[in-house]
Length: 524
Image (cartoon, one colour):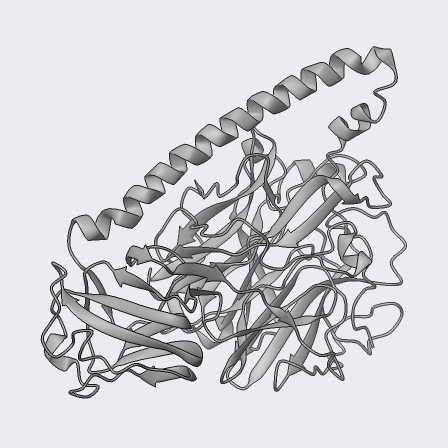
């Protein structure tokens, strides 16, 4: 039974020219090249900084726009504090990033693997990842015929079964969990999703995009002629797949596009399919992310560069997906790729790199990412293996694995957990602090909170008019301090929990905290 590859070095990019030359700095004949390349790098960094600052200003305008025009209608949606979209003012408190915790080892965990995807379909968790046929003896390059897609199932997202599907002969046997094999290019980064579009045909309930655009080296010469884009796949059960046509063509100006996990999903908020895929910022030679959309999964719009990169920063993957409790919010857990430190793969000893996992977010319809935090979400840690070549990826999708817990799956076989909604909180220490929202409208009769306090901490809430005037009956003096720890707790004023008289009216929420964390809120 095949369960995955050893945590070796995956095939990847081979761009070590600068490091190769720099490594020969003692040879005087290379000094002019080194000087020229350093100058080019400095210019590139200045260009990147200017581009990022311009994008920051543009994003700032987008984020403050609701406060300058009409109130934001949040309806009964769950809202997290993963960006400043609803935040007007913070005093004495802070937005705090919470880091996932490695879970205890499972009895039957997922194996070390390459690009992966986790899908929760009702009571079943499905895992997909790229593997390698141990019996493959051909040439090794990204997209070679020895790449395979392997499959596992779980009832709890913790312990996994590896079914014998018997579909392909791999390493001389059909006793394996391989669901796709013997297809060049497209199995390098096969990325499936569960299509939740209303009315989707049963035979297309699962979909995927896959494809690799690289040419040259020891790759087949015919690859340069056609088929370099992303190809569509469909399936009724997530196991038996049908390959369709090439739907996102390769563009030469993208340079090494698609050499990553290119992810897609149906967005109920946008009423269309959305795809985030690897492109490059050519002027700075940085791996980055672009976005394209489609109403039918066949014809896709001209891509828009998301360009979330800081100066000199590479993003190897994006892992962008709708948050399962708030599909209008897209969570991204990209791998940050750092050349020049860490470890090099055996196939290219100049390609030294270290990696970690970041947290970014976007909202449905946005063409930019929000980055409240630029520090690592998941560090490599004490394990020296995490400092090896391209060692830190998480699978596509954060999924619930309990009523108070959600999970992320690392490529080296570990599961990481986080409190439900617990990416970021509004945090205040013992001295207290507060946060006020921009004007908003809501629907519902109760205000529900996901929060945690210390034994002496608490949260009070005041509802104000759009102009900041406390609403009688919902003032801070009327608020009953809430303490404890809960994923879903209705807030109470002296008059009770009913806020239906304010539904549909522009209001502000003022959260006053002491020694407490507030993770999310919603009206129901």
